[in-house]
Amino acid sequence: MKKFLFIALAAIALSSCADVSGALFAGGDGTYDFKNTYLDLEFHVDESKIHLLDLESGTQDTIYALYVGDFAQIATDTIIVFLHGNTPSMDSYWQTAGLFANLVNKHHYGFIMYDYRGFGWSTGRSTGAESMAADYDAVLSFLQAQGLTSDRMVVVANSLGSLPAGPAAAGGSRIPVQKLVMEVPQSTANVIMQNATGLSLPASMITSYKFDLGQNMEDYSGELLWMHGTEDDVAPIETAEAAMQKHQGTHYQEALYEGAGHGLRWDIGDEEWSKVVLDFIRH
Amino acid sequence: MMKMKYVVVLCTLVLATSCTPTKVVVPLEEGQWQIGVTQGRPQFNEGFLPVLGGYAAKGISSTKTNYGGIQFSSLFLGAVQLEAGQVATLVPQQGLNPGISYSYGAQSFMSTRDYAFRFYPEAGLNAFFQAGPHILNVSANTWVDPTWFLADFGRGQILAPSFSAGYRLRYKWFEAQLEYKILNPTREIHIPQAYVPNTSGLGGKGFFYGIAINF
Image (cartoon, rainbow over all chains, first blue to last red; front, side, top):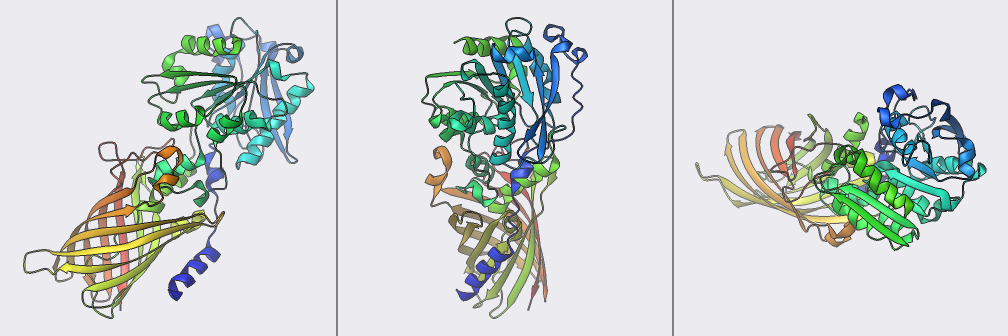
């Protein structure tokens, strides 16, 4: 027994405490070559309305955001705040930007998306809840200064974007979230650990990033649209459902698609996707 | 689209757990020590993961051997994973009739971040055939999860079984071990943005290696 205790204590002392949270983020290079050339014809935008912004995040980092629309629009119109998924940069979502910029008609809504630290040109490194919250707040700070109010903001979170969107909706947003779209969201940090091991191990065995979208949804009082495919092998629908259905807010809507995977919009088509999102925004 | 480090680290989870290899199949001689290092290589995507561990075993009689081990990979990630147990002969090998041994013990995990603790008793059965320095075995083992109810959204399972077949060369002071293991084939192992080779959609699998010295 003494030997066992000795080994246990020695192991604790030697433990490196390497945190995998940084490795969860697949940030990489970006070109930010946002041109109509790369968009389907129906998603073309007025290129004079494409604005690349650099915003201060925290005390040391700069994140880059793409705003599509007129800046004056922010004080008067509905603005879509898009939190993208786990790809190297927001380059991958240029088509998504074009789609949102053409909802209803061209530039009806303003649209903004941004790269988290370590993604694209954004400096620093995403490490977990703190860095994600700071990046989100940098964008919200800009929008607030431009005159955006809670009743005209729609937050749309795709996959990884659900991690910062959850705490923001649960009260962590300087402009309170009243409308939230969760597209193929994860659920909890523990679920990722438990699905990978088949055991009841908590995420704290490998990371200090403890996200819990179920708790966030329980604490979120606004409107929620949850979109998911039944064949999603990145964010399993069963656990996402358990998290999203904890929502007790003013309006809950779900759009589930048999046979669709994690690339939901590509699987169900832009028309269906746009219809569901637009119906929710206008609700 | 995805960084390799992301895959490697996440996949290491799979193995930090049920991927510990079978330490001892045929009990050691009374008073004999064995110290070894193991490398689990559970498959993921097109490759495998190197999951490292170490162990020590001692024959406390001609039919019973105690062992203890530690997983270095878990330690690197901030979890102290220790195991201890005993292997005992149930039926000695007689001629061409294989012998049977059983094992029982436990695995423990403790987070160095918030000191969360998990304890998993385990039990196993080995059929072995020894001819000189050569040992062949097939084994079945299961971990028991007494805290299955702590899994989020009620998705825990009480048993986490594994099945393996292996070869060992135990020659005087040296032992080399090779084992192929099917892990947790009672549930889907899921790692975001990675493919885990499985058995009919369930569990994981991979080769395990070990080298040890006897003295």
